[in-house]
Length: 322
Ligand code: CDV
Image 1 (tube, rainbow, N blue to C red):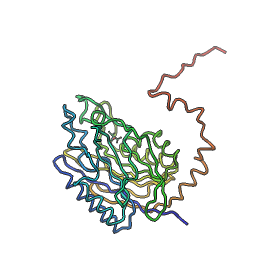
Image 2: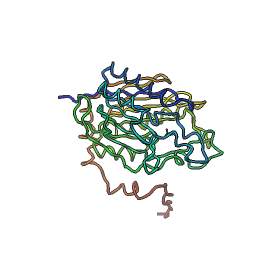
Image 3: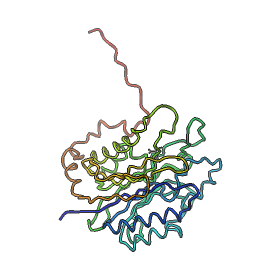
Image 4: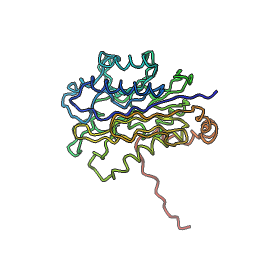
């Protein structure tokens, strides 16, 4: 019997700094209603979906940013998402800023079963940006100041989803998608669907060199398509898009199959639902042939991947005169 799953990337348009969670949650519930009408079984929302992308705003006192964080899920403000999930029988993926009871802060995503139970949690590992105010940058990117590096690894969970039966689910968050190591750790756990939310500026904000604007989307898609192909998995990659308080995010949410092909792509910079029917058995071809890891991987040659962080200067060839 074919294992089929209907998924949606629920792209969100901009959320302004002054807008509360009532606004974002209301928009997300409307997207879930639309998803229900289209027969969707899993909805994937973006990274930090409940608020504006607040790491662009510097606060000398870190605690002054605490109002962007969730200390409970669900809360009064996020409960409508859980209610919609139950009402429509839809599972959902949500990116949010997590503050633990111990006061630790993470950039987190959860996968929630229609019953409201949290099936899987992931905390972002590859935090981009910087920890202190950077006067060179055009816009601050303070993820390293506001979040700790995720401490859950890259977990994959096999759980029943929709009519497909058990599905191997994994997550990445935004910058993680650019790191092949992250995809491979998921691939090594036979992941079948990677859920991934992102907030990516249309311009390179580092102000340390030129990057052509059109390459920003290319690099995002290239990373996701390669990750899917090389690990024989689907991905649902959902953006926050549009202009937040003058800062543009590029959108271009996509759903990708294990061949690395784009199955669906957002075309607006607003709230937009894109959907695809996944034939999960498509994951088998890659993992039983060219990416049969058990047969073809050569771990004895990969030592540097975990032993070393920065790149070393290679040995220099010296002519012997022979
Ligand atoms: N939220 C992110 O992780 N954004 C990064 C930007 C800063 C490049 C990204 O990789 O898209």
